[in-house]
Length: 64
Image (tube, rainbow, N blue to C red; front, top):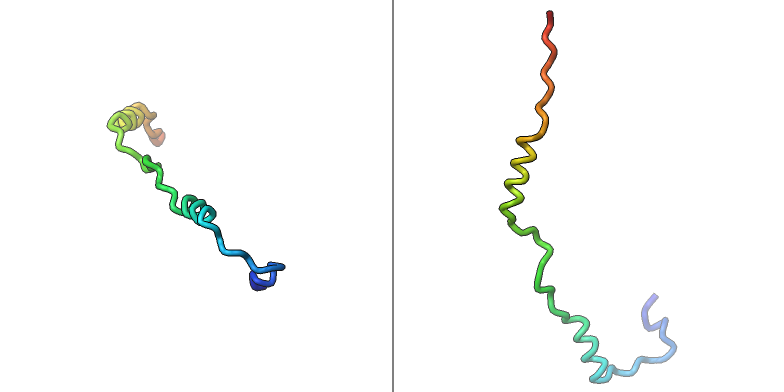
């Protein structure tokens, strides 16, 4: 269904104030801080500590 069929009367052109409001909404600036992961050297040492302290794999039982 075309959009013109939904309107009962033609739309008036936007005023300068309406255009400014729409432009402000459309051209909003990006956030100064992104959600990208950041290098953290303490995380590497924590991961190494977890690996070193994790339990060893169980050995296969010996046959007698």
